[in-house]
Length: 450
Image (cartoon, rainbow, N blue to C red; front, side, top):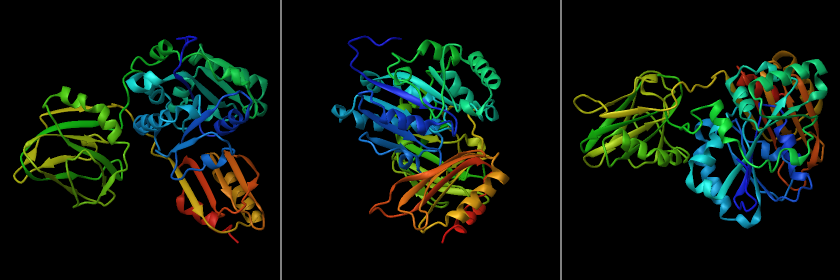
């Protein structure tokens, strides 16, 4: 799919790669190279706090950040909103770069440029660039996210080649070619690559994407179930037991029809609703069928009941983040349980690795550099295998410049950054990994403060 010479849609590059592969380093290179492009950047992070926009160098480009956790579940609504806002200031940029979180499947991001008519009219997906940590990728090679990132890459950058032997690098490249024979593969150190190898590629290969995933154009949704109910005016109970999550997002909305087709007609609108800020609802709380996103808190043990007040008789739909059977979810009236008259499941088989989590630390105060160095050194010795990624900005005691660091497993890089100047000083760290101990990480960092 080549762009025509008269193509006036804005090109978009999706930058993906597993945690710690070097995406931020590559992004900084793109923003500082003399390629003559004005680039708007959209970032997505997996984590409780966002630090990537602080690690990206100062530039004139616009940086937009989404902290959604799992990009594959929530990205489309947010991405459509941000892209729509960008196009209202079209004269300020001529290229868009989307950097996904390291745990992202790039397919739903790419889908946005084929599934949404307005986006498709104004933007074109130029390509997917996957950057690979040649030193550590084999630790995660069998993970679904890692394989999806490699499979969908139009360009694959084998980064950190100076850390592996030529034989191992050759074997790794052969494994990747076995998965994605069409990708252009380049060897890089510190993500150094000619810009013409990753920008203006001429178009994302939709045909190849469909060969990899025949369901590519069947989007993933941020909800897993929708059910239609015929309800009278009155108050009902949503009853849930303990399940796989500490909360569940739910939208209740009045409907015009009572069939599966009516549910499907509401799907795109619900994508946008699920990207809104939720209204929190504790057990015993009340929410209404007004299409607002409600987040039901389920962390208390035992049965939880939430009140649904219906203002008038009619057909209503419930769109739920998780499947009803995960929480023994039921809707109950005053006399009996109400059964849905029609329902549909979405994203069957979509699961997250619940052992992979993030711990964010934001703290004021000055840090003793010796204590901080000793703490990180011991942490990496003891837990380095389980820490996929760590990064942060530190206020070192009696230093005028920020100290920034990044790490992947047991590899660590830290250095002074730009001056604090008149800005308020702070410390911000993020750890992403498996079976992280939040209390121990918080306690360890606090012990480093002066």
